[in-house]
Amino acid sequence: MALSHAILSALTERQCSGYDLAKQFDGSVGFFWHASHQQIYRELTKLEQQDLLTAETVPQEGRPDKKLYQVTEAGRAMLREWIAQPSIYPPTKDDLLVKLFVGYLVPPATLIATLERERAQHAATLDAYRTIEQKIFANLEAMPQAAQFQHITLRNGIHYETAWLAWCDETLERLERMGGEGWA
Picture 1 (cartoon, rainbow, N blue to C red):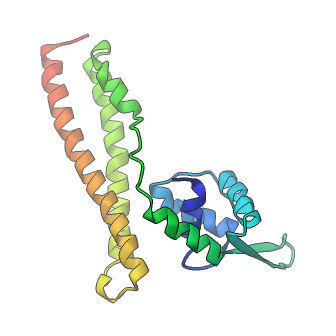
Picture 2 (cartoon, rainbow, N blue to C red):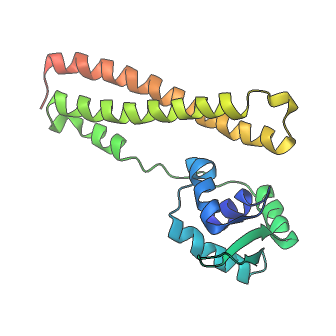
């Protein structure tokens, strides 16, 4: 997936400025496709040049003019074509797994502390996902179809974090047992 697809996807429901898009990105698509604000602005320019987006300039008092971006029919057609293509299974690049692979090189406490820090981050993400689900998707049956699909992606995140935490707890228990036997 290219950043362009993520941006077009984020803009399908409503037009917004680059700033608002970057904020929205951080709280939605950004959970599974990270991009800096600078990358988003560069991509918006490219998409507009390719006629996949249009931009309406809105004058503002005391501030620079604001551009409101909206997906064109050509942009929607590109998304439909992209959705129909098979997804590429992304290669795993995980620092923690590499560290665990050679974890015997450090004292048990070092590896356990590293894993506990990672666990706290995943637990916080899971809490954030559950909060989003409770606040935004509480009455799912009454929500529009677009929200149903957004909820599906949120549920993937909840399942991922739940599984990750279960693996982490299992691994911490094992490391604590192994640490009692000593290594390194």
